[in-house]
Image 1 (spheres, rainbow, N blue to C red):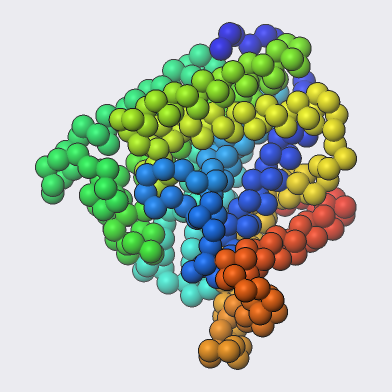
Image 2 (cartoon, rainbow, N blue to C red):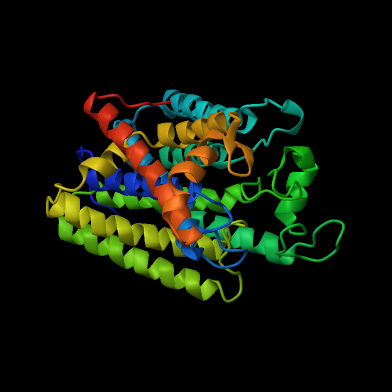
Length: 378
């Protein structure tokens, strides 16, 4: 990508808020099915290798984090402000995000001896802090080079370094180098409760995830240049297409895999994120098509509140013990069994309807608080 032209103050990208909001809406759909046993395949994560639409949600969030920090920190960097105070504020926010992630893991039983230390908000916090440090202290060329180093270095570690205890490299769930590192440092009681032997948001996988955030930061810097909108759009689209192609090519040797956050996964999903952002940029910021954006923007500006609030609310409802057709159930399950499932013959349709109802409830609440001007910032 050519060197960006001189940066100038830029208005808030409507397309970025819309992109974030659409990602939040997809997250609410995939995280809140009426029945986890009956889900359409596109709304499930890939079993291991591969990528479904659901697998795009988290990397899109990290890409958006990168774009956002390029806008939020650009003024301080361009003005030559000392990096220390700026990064101190970034560190405080990252610590708050990490703490919210821990609180989500602890709630409602607060079992500190078995709490999952890492998770989605924790990885967002680490990537946000790491990408901010790199952005403030380096040029875009250095950032691009670091992405390459991270992806190649991670591939070497995962595919060539023998895993202690096995003596051979592995990309299997329980025997890969990242899983061994997590069990060694974090210990099994503090890993993902579904497995307790590996964690999809583990320590080693944070390195390529940082690459996802830096790809977003590069895209944000490109959009902040003085180039004409058409040039920005074309450059972003071409870069996105090339990244998708490179990810698919690399996947022949290092499979696309969200749980491992493989290098091919970073390029493939980062390229798709760039292409979607380019489309939204053209629609919202170039063409000025905004009649449809109010709802996704309302979701986008309060993304962290939605993620944290939906998790806490779901677990709070689970504390209720209400009489269901097959015995006591939590509040969310009670609502689903009593008022949604009976209206559908296909249980997958019923499950999807449950997710849509959850989405609509949250969207109504978000539109209301948006009109009140309330935005939750950590």
